[in-house]
Image (cartoon, rainbow, N blue to C red; front, side):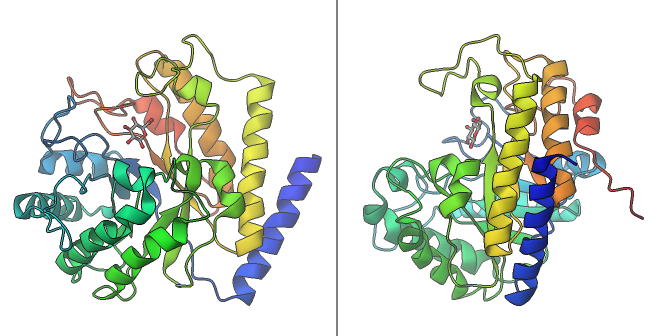
Length: 336
Ligand code: BGC
């Protein structure tokens, strides 16, 4: 056994002890998960090039073997002024309709707040708005089953929103949710776009139904090569699969296991993927396969980025799934 494996085994045992000693709830049962990304974040639904979501999308996602969707939604530009920040009623109805379509297809839904850029630029000035938004979402979905619908307070904290001010910023929103959803699972990711290093200093509120997450796009110069929304955009042509890449993945997994040992909690990967514009399908398959084979055996589930419109698992033109990608994210413990 390698030193890394021995260390990971010891840390996992510590994680199990810690979890039992502190009566920590089971990990969120995310299972196979995919982000329905770039649909409800634009100003108008799917105006970044996607199609309007309908029931077929969710039936197809279920049919492809997914248990859960993560549903990114931009709310912050759909409200009236403070102090109430009333969410546009048509928008709220549409989000509910999308959640209902996913439920009808027997999918769990992780509903988030995405792209609230002002919050990341100035957390203190936007804390009340975030809470007001979540108070309304909470009220709207209060009767939905805790087992099937989960909330994620804000995607990828970054810029001025760090692990130092994360709880001050997110706790009012959590309390607003708790006014109507006493035990709804709520997800929180840490600073620096919830990268794996954020786990080292991530603290969660004292609430048994809050679950940790992180995002995994490492090595970033591979997964985001040529991405126009990254400045500077990583150079095109970086391939994946060297020994150094394997070592890095193993080291990153060790960081997650260290988090599990420290807290007793098992996080899940809320986003992982590689940009299709400049990366071949074969290389995307190699990446997803490596990430799955590294994290799944540790009990860490992943949400793929993404469905059709960005880093796609399903071709929007043909409607066909990429079977190689679906296969790459399979992992079986062999236990029946
Ligand atoms: C962003 C997307 C982006 C993806 C990969 C997500 O969190 O919302 O716009 O394509 O990360 O960078």
